[in-house]
Amino acid sequence: DTEVTQTPKHLVMGMTNKKSLKCEQHMGHRAMYWYKQKAKKPPELMFVYSYEKLSINESVPSRFSPECPNSSLLNLHLHALQPEDSALYLCASSQRQGVGSGANVLTFGAGSRLTVL
Amino acid sequence: DAKTTQPPSMDCAEGRAANLPCNHSTISGNEYVYWYRQIHSQGPQYIIHGLKNNETNEMASLIITEDRKSSTLILPHATLRDTAVYYCIVSHAGGTSYGKLTFGQGTILTVHP
Image (tube, rainbow over all chains, first blue to last red):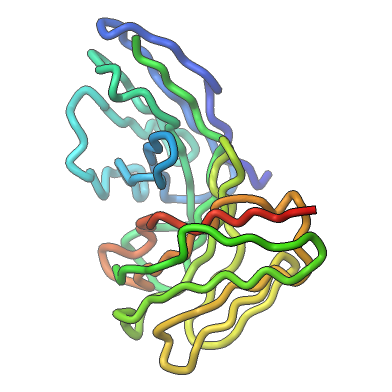
């Protein structure tokens, strides 16, 4: 299995809702990533988990809350979002991050398209 | 991570080679060059990477200059399905930033029939 699976593919939520995005991989990767991509812009890194511990938080607002229950799963909990948070949210995984050396290739999922009303 | 500079857009005729340049003049000795592409509304797809030597795989070739300050991605026989945004990324091969990819603006490649 060489895929990263993201659910749901589309999500519409109001500003007072609480929702979650989910990401799963079964490649044995120990690093997982959340990226945010606005229309016509490049992906921007939000969070990185390495060996189930939060390794990098790119100063993301607290209304986005990541969770890594185990090495195969990554969640992004959403609460009190703003319309400007509407974007494509991309999950990725790689063999490792922050430890070791050498090339490190990320495998991306297809993304979850979020619309905040 | 070193910053990269790519042309905003390029065109290519179907069946011809597409040569996408990337400038990374501040690259350090322990940084890899990676190429990813993103077809409309899909997740980025890994293409190829290299450190010092030229590399080839089933998708593309990567030519890195001897001083490592620039590189070229070559798609040998472009097809309409190669129309995408192509990102050149430089990333550390170790340390706390290891594995962290920072995307630039990329090059929009349009392949014409």
